[in-house]
Length: 220
Image (tube, rainbow, N blue to C red; front, side):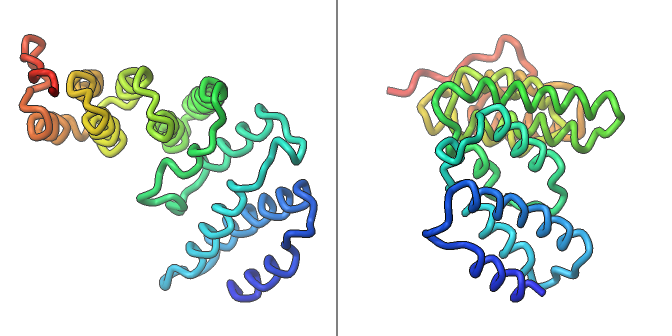
């Protein structure tokens, strides 16, 4: 099945096809691929590989030249990612947001938070939590340091991976105080609170639960 889908996709795609046609093709394939992932046995990972390959191609298509409005494109993409249940971007969580144009990050964040509120109101906590995590990956993709603390506060301690990623990004950017502030913002009751406190101490030598804990000396 995956081989037939790949052959079909290759046959329908090509450099001579117009951008709107290519955008529609790969967007449609995402729907088909998601349905296949729901129903198929992906023990060997071939479905996931095909889906990821096609998704990466979709993200490279110039949707602005194809005629899509930013609000429409990002609304659709955010809805896709919030409802993704097969770890399409596993270990590459910033992938969907690496091409966010300057000035559109606020739009994407607004869409994600709107989806979070919508799903939370419907008691769909999995999707709501996905939306909150995606906000963190959005800002990580663009290294938007000023948004890290707010993103960590929304995450709390129930989702440790994006919190640690935010802190590590701050440290990589020579901002140790920001890394500590990220951990402190996430230091709320939740499943991974102890793990995050230990991780903060490991990375910064500071206990985030201590409001008087000293920040590390500035990096020279």
